[in-house]
Image (cartoon, rainbow, N blue to C red; front, side, top):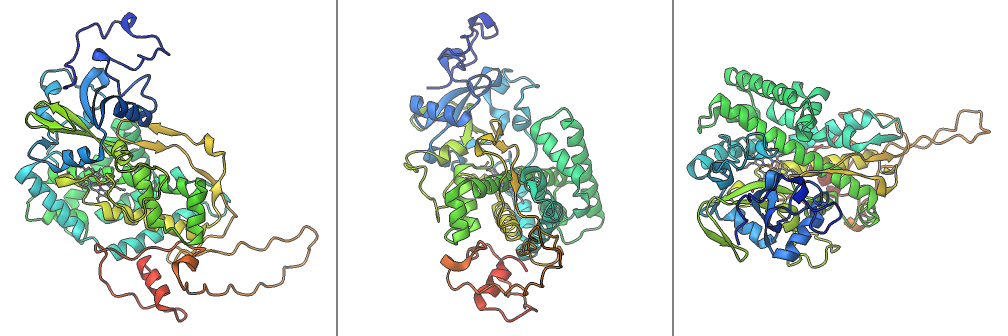
Length: 507
Ligand code: HEM
């Protein structure tokens, strides 16, 4: 079944809408479910309802009752993104757009409007643009970036460690990726509160979103011009000088794609992992007991709460079939990352640990699969690891049921994550993050200076991962990690395992 074309049956007549509370509420023409408005407040629940009613590929309605297919099955989503002969990301073939059903002010226009960037290109043009992005990503020094992530984390934690409380979404998760991405792009001087604010504004579509968009674009245009005139060793210069010969406009647009897509996704990922760490006793116990590493917690989060819930959209290049449905040429399909990740055919038990299984859809797949996934993972792994090194006792400062989220079709954001911990002094940002002992409390009657404490004993070299950590332990590097030799450690003699850990964390 193809989603009904736009119905003329009085959709604008409010008297024909079912009253709130009616089971048909949230349904539009043809009885199809709306993915917006009343009835769509909880999209995960709506996807499950669609799965039950229609199977792995379901018809539904976008804003203005524009028909779309929602792909819910894991296998069907993989087929969608991996079959470029049948499906592409070029909205210019989308029937509702060609028929004028999608108005220029449609709220999804920022995701729909075609741009000359790799995300929407296909075939040779995709290879040209994507080749330049891949080339620039391949020159990133992973070890140097991990070191930078540690330094940026130190700086952010220093801003609140003496307080004993923090709000980790706005004070940490939304800042760390911007600091690291500005460094990667070669524009560390542009990282500041205004840049973070601008990115937040755009993603939330606030009233100042247009001004914020202009602010970020101007910074990226300036940066492109600077690097065209004077190339350096950074991502932007690699794009400028790539044999694909990108124009200035193409370079700026790709810097934009990388900055914004990577920023939002990585900020979401960090917030989600930190929430998991402070709320889920299983993970907390596993992390501090050494059975679960931070990267494993990150991977579990990528399954349960992918930073992008869906990607709008893929489009059918020809009449075809998906999940038993007849899809017509020009139909739009929502790439369902979140519903695909909880498809009961691949996850019959949602509480089961997905340790070691990276087949989630969080980074997409096929020709458009995210080329920056190892960078996104590195920012989250290293940043969360370093934060827990500094503040191993963080705990949620409100009841878990007081946490709230904002949700759109594209993503779900944790609004705030207030935490509490023992106040601690700042650390030199060039020092590796470590646990600063909390100063001994004077008892109320003590008036003398407390006796000097013995210097903290050096951390014992962990014998095996199970005992390794009051500090979480990072995993073995994968093939993407650079094969640099470990840096010589100037300090006290270290065991080989500890030296490896320090190297992996980027010291
Ligand atoms: C946790 C972090 C990240 C997540 C969850 C994520 C997720 C995604 C997803 C779902 C897509 C679309 C795939 C598709 O259409 O099938 C994508 C595309 C893309 N991502 Fe990421 N991403 C992340 C971080 C990054 C980073 C750090 C970079 C760059 C350094 C990056 C650069 C890109 C680019 C350039 C594309 C477009 C690729 C193309 O169309 O060929 N992403 N990402």
